[in-house]
Amino acid sequence: MAWNWQLPEWPEFEWDPERLTRAEERFLLYFGQIRGITKHLGGPDGQQILVEAISTEALTTSEIEGEVLDRASVQSSIRKHLGLKADKHRPKPAEEGVAEMTVDLYRTFSEPLTKETLFRWHGMLMKGRRDILRVGQYRNSREPMEIVSGAIYAPKVHFEAPPSSSVPKEMKEFVAWFNRTAPGGAAPLPALTRAGLAHIYFESIHPFEDGNGRIGRALSEKALSQAVEQPSLTALAATILVRRKAYYKALEYANKRSDVTEWLAWFAGTVLEAQIRTETRIEFVLGKSRLLEKAERVGVNDRQKKAIARILKEGPDGFQGGLSAGNYASITGASPATTTRDLVELVEHGLLRREGERRHARYFLTIPTREIPLVAVAGSGEIREAA
Image (cartoon, rainbow, N blue to C red; front, top):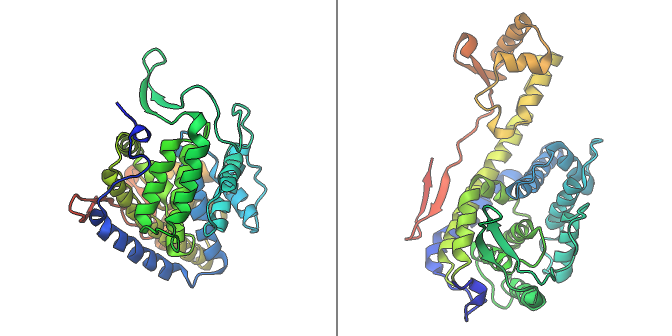
């Protein structure tokens, strides 16, 4: 079995552009809607949307690789790098590194890609790592770079990358391709097509010892941002995390052929779904602001403020299954009688809504939310949404 980089046509990918036509149009339409929602936002709301968007991508791109980071520390680090007021959280090197890289991506999206950009990002991501021999440099091991799973005595090889000796040449060609296909370049490509190709092309070379997935997703985000001439803030990594098994399956399928139509269709559906997730998060931040203003206006007590803040920390999804009286008591330290009284008041003020009765009662924030559908690009190019 040959890998894509072993095929005679490498790195010339093939795909059906007509299958992606509707998806490309919808991407631009959705981005226009998101830009319309946010263009007049400034002050705390605008800052919060920016920090939430960047931190969510930083956290989820790491979680895809099995690395769970502390949200508060990542957000604090991002605020610091953006020049905003930050709290006193002391992030670990991994949290500081991914925060620094995502802010750098946000600030430099419009710049041409260079080898130095990739080395800088890798150095940020590998901050504090002592097990990586070549930080901020391409790999040079004589051993094959393989993606494997399963037991040590019976590993399953999902992909083998080109030998290290060919990486500098492959990456020189990749960087040139990325810049050539950018808007205004010699051979510009549509947004979703270029972002999807950039990801599979980069992952196929796998130029670093570690961090290839995170940098590959950052390159897709850079491509999307260049297409719309501003940071797209698309929840790409957050959506890939939800689709993680399908993501790896789609990559593995594409790594064995030069025709990447199926990969690009899968990727396009994921980006369109990510845009819905982005819009939902923006709506949540705006709803959160209105809810907190109302809480101040009606004069909730300190216990109630603490509980609301804890629920808001969970984001648009809130507490899994809703807030129970037991949860409230654990968060606030309130007695059963006080818990009951506080929750009744929060419902009366319109800050929480109740579902169920007595011990089965659960409480939810009154911020409107919507379920995010699974978006797919069909063989005909039709865009389908499923709950």
